Length: 113
Length: 112
Image (cartoon, rainbow over all chains, first blue to last red):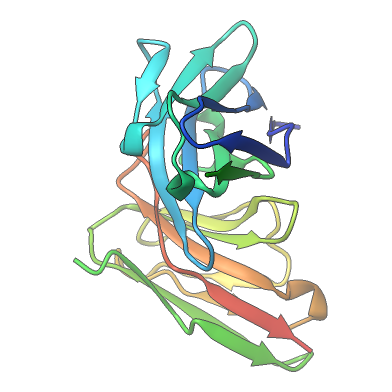
């Protein structure tokens, strides 16, 4: 079965430090990959996507993600975390490039002052 | 633009009741989807559509029906509500393959 895994339920970082939220995928072919963020009691907001090309993609709010085909990973990164980055982050893959997204379980990012 | 609009925001149903969750988008997006969000399980796809008149099942379709008579609207029908359908439901739309989805603000459904 095709799946997306986020191995950490929660990531804690201090404000100003770099952050990484991990994502690995088990999806056939060359999937499209996405990161979304969810603030409390809100819908999901699109952060960035990887379709093809450069393995480092840049997105909203200073976030970027690194695609690694050999490790089937798509980790979310930010050089300097803000307290306002605290939220729930979801990685997703478009299985077979059909528009059907498979989501990971989500990772709660907690940034402390 | 309003984006993706879901109604109602909250709903309590009794077991066995039926209802329709409404979803409308004003971005002329072809792709629309329904997801349910449960703690620790991420979002799971219920049904999706790639255009008016075309729908298909996702990962957890049982107990739900959809139709897509127009590009703008994609209602989700619960046929006979069960406590296992207690969840937060999100509707989303996209221009197409490779494009990011825009999500609605969600409907929190409780079945008692």
